[in-house]
Image (cartoon, rainbow, N blue to C red; front, top):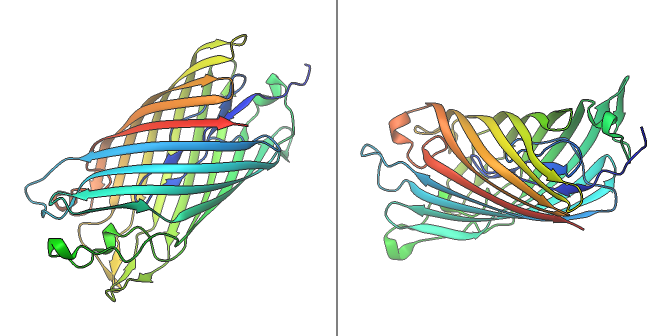
Length: 325
């Protein structure tokens, strides 16, 4: 079959779980589809650049047993930039903006820690090999894989205080982890014919301990993720370069306990299984995605005390926009 260049539109999604971690996805008019939350395996085209933005809004269920200083609503914005160094190696930078609001109306807003990521793409075709520059449609049906590393740098504000509301300092409303965090991940994608794509990923994220200005040492909990996605191409028009995909995902998250001054904290940690339903529209080199993510199963530590934590959302509304140039 004649070799073709894959017309790609990059969709670097941010999977805002416990502390806002970026995952990767990419798709185009020809080839595999792109999930909203699960990391896909395609890398950026060599020499191409990505501009990206994502909004995620979460509203939390209220519990009478929870104290009134729990998070009531969060809005996460993620701005991103990517560059295809080679056909198999891509680099990304993400700048998140957080808004957190408690039940008592105390909150914080601002840019959080910058995140840097590298992704290495490879495939299996009579043996493992790095992603080639071009692939035929038949080659695209091979199993493809990506391994990626992510580090966050403590660039956000860590001295946010609230003296007018009778609270001097709250580490969990700060706009920085205060120290680097590190993530290692792996993903796999299989494209079946013209319409169906299956994607899988897993990752582990760990945070270093930091002492805030009130002399409280915080070690945010480690996180483990595993996700699977079914993407189906509903409609495509090659002439107008238009495509519409449907997306159904299962996203598992396991969180350890946060530590304060070396002591594990109650009302933190547990397991959550989310279900994500969404759509993705492609037009030339522009893509728009939208979806809703809800917790469908939870096994949280001290469940009734974890208002405002992962697994206690009424919903998470997701909207993404990206363009490749």
